Image 1 (cartoon, rainbow, N blue to C red):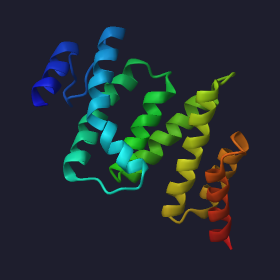
Image 2: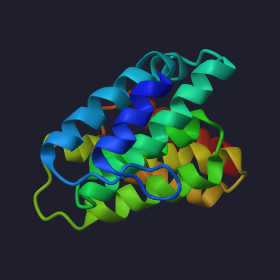
Image 3: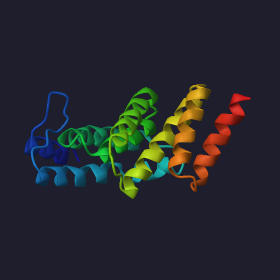
Length: 171
């Protein structure tokens, strides 16, 4: 694995922090494949609410470094921003996750016509911000973000639960 990571970083260059500097679409695709391999199983466990091993957390950290290069290659694409936020959440880096979800929201709010995928990313980013605000006992922020998620996708039951949780905490 170390050899593959080193090869990826040498192949497309990297900054001093080890984040790959992506120069073209071919490098983007190659780094994306490597990054997915690193994070796939661990992020699936995280999304299911299962505890992560140290090795899985380390794979997410490595993946996060690679994904930062992917985000920097095209900073108008909200998907890498969102995935970075999810990885930071999985690593219990709450402040960075909040910052990344907030950047995702800010970016997507500038789009005039959002695709269904972009709408889903926006709603889920608001929902994650609501959940993180609840964890920090910022009830009003949680309610505001939950309402935004619910407004974007009123049929998603998790967003109704998020809003109900915020309203219950506000009592």
